[in-house]
Length: 223
Image (cartoon, rainbow, N blue to C red; front, side, top):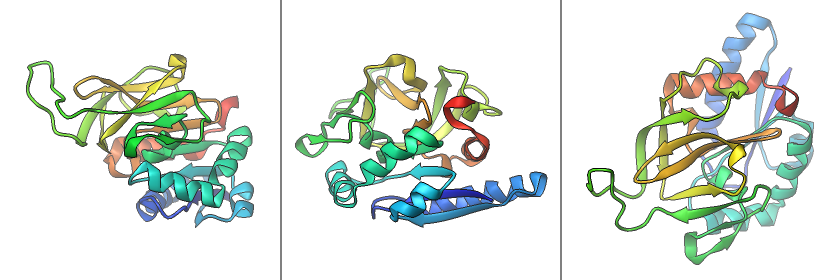
C-alpha cells in the first residue's frame, strides 16, 4: 500500500488534491497492483507513518502561518523531508521560505533559503501591456533540472497558477522550473526529498496529473 498524507491545517484545496492523487493512484494500481491510500490529516502520527506527504495551501500567508504554527506543521514537514518524498503546492511552497512580504511581512518556516515577494501594482509584459495581479490562469513552465517528477511532462508545458506573490531563491541550483509573468519567477523547486510547485498540479490537466503520478513512484533524494 502506497500511503499518502495530505496535511490538513485548514488552509488548502485539500479535496481537489486528494481526488487527483487518488485518480492517478488508481491508474498505477491497475498497472502494478499496488494500491494508493490518500489521507487528509493533521495527525502527526499519520503523517509520520505515510510513505509520501503533500503540503498544500491557498489563502493569505499570515492566516496560513498562524495555523501552521498552532498545529506545529513545520516540525511535521521538516521531519518528513528527512525521510520521504514531500510535495508542496502553492502557498505550501511559499511557507517553506524564510519570509514573505504578504500581509505587511510574515516570517515563514525557513526550511528553504528563499523569500516571497509581491508582483507589484504596475506589472507589465515585454510589450509594456499591464498585467493583472493575481497571476491567474495557464502559463508555460520551463524545466531547469532533469527531475523524476518531470518525466513524461514536455518542457514548456502549461500549468495553472493562482498567486499574487512569487518566490525568489538564494540557492538557484534548487530551482527546477521557471515561468514568466512580467518577470521571471520560480515555478518549481527541488531540494533533496522535497519538490515544490507554485502552480496547482491538481488543476493542470494532463501535465499536472503526470507530475502527481510521478510523485507516487518517486523515491525522493535517492532517485
